[in-house]
Image (cartoon, rainbow, N blue to C red; front, top):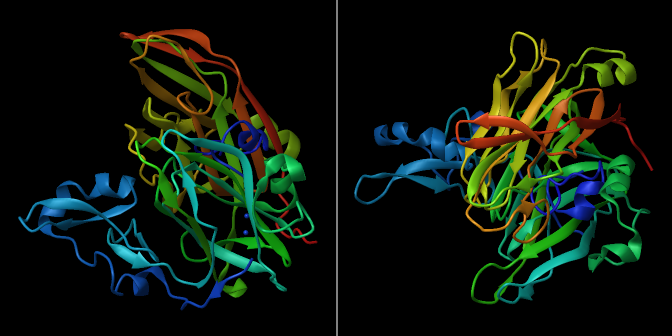
Length: 416
């Protein structure tokens, strides 16, 4: 996803205009871990292993930010982040170890000055993997003031050159090209310092042999002091024979934001995919959603994502209020089967206290998008590029526009 969430490429455009949700991947460090089921992992040590009675009142709010819950010294329940190597299991609601063999890379430390924003750079990590890799989870840990990053993987003869940081234009980097040549690894929640993109057991994505991981770079230091830090990206390999379900990426973005000053406003895209799926895939709209990541900037007061059409019209997939810079990628167990719906509805509400109109963009401008992974034969990229007045909801002006969708068969066995 662009500069902020999900910046998927139009299927490549996301990364070029922003760092939102993305389709993308990494000189090589390989660490062995032990494969384990989520149930076995929950019994390990390191994070929250048992919920107190008091936690029952807040645990659902904690899970929204990929956290568990524990009482503090006074007995008051508090949301607690899981340590590196663990994630908040949505079933048990406690911290669980991430099973699998860990591949990880830490990029060079860098310093950004107060108020500095870094865009237009990319980074890469060549895996030197002679065999294919199936991954079930991705983990990001960073203290470099990364606002957002979109991670892709490609054959290692693509975007060739020394690993580390480099100007994207020097290698003509395109998220769209990267997604089609390889695939999508992960996208970072806005400003998240630790995030885990975890799929259920038996669910994975294939990285072909001889691959390179890449991402765009969007660093934004909003603090009054210089920030010195780095980025660590890791993914967790599982045996091929354990993979029962393979995932495909999708992305939706509201591109034409026109957020009025001194008000709350709502932008909604209603995207019917029945024709695209029937024309391209010769099938009704049919997918099972396993993971979704919303993206806004600081003015975003709500992000919503739901089913469109049919008897399940309006059924919620995500409905998050407020912006907090936390990890907000969400996994679904069981997955959300869209059967009976004709498409997806998504949108954002913004509270704009400024005296000027805010548009789509980096820095103090805004974004509204979502990246997802689903069991589907088709991948798609959808953009809303108009902000047409659509009446009022009380004192809240509403805007909408038609969805422009590119759908295409997603090849799971891409090779060199």
